[in-house]
Image (tube, rainbow, N blue to C red; front, side, top):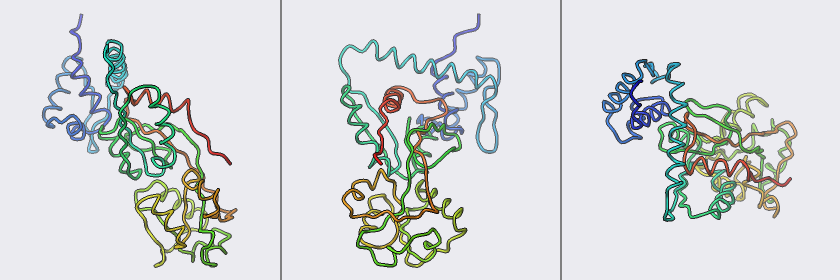
Length: 301
């Protein structure tokens, strides 16, 4: 009979598989790169087969490595369940979650409030643009995140969650130039309030505009803002056309302070997706993911 595998080596192996690079896994584990490399070599010696192949872009799992990862994930989940089952005194659980800015402001609060009512839980949300959040998931710094506008991402597993629509909005008392925008082509000369590069919202809008009108030359009157709320504030001040999620702007649309432009030739649908490490979510993050999938909010028309 072969010797049992060391669970500590399996945990290091899972971290390397999720990060895709030895160096990134080492940072997440607070170990040196040689220490992580040595642990992987010991695990490969125990298994008797190579588990990883080294490439210029990092590491990739071999066929035996992929098989072992499935068992390692199941073992990690089983250990989480065992720890929960034997806990006698109530202990505050911690939910650490990443979110892009639109989602953090408009979608997560009600979900988190409902989830927290189910028991004592400490919540920490890291907010950034989509690329920043995805990089935190890749390196293992975040066990779960909710991002916007992507169908795939390198070394991250994406699972669809909610549908969304980006709407072209202007203030109800905006300058006449903005209120006259009726077609996508009108946006060639109308100022646009952009999110910063790396934002999922910006990437989706740029892609939709290229498809509708080709390349749009930047205008000196264009504005760039680093958050959803800043974009909304600039739109309310009449600085330009803002593309915002209906989730974000539903209060202003209901009050009439923002107006949706009737751009029939520019419909921008997108989705919100869960971003998970390659091995999947574990612990409280996995619990929250299951809860959210059954309690997904809806957007009234």
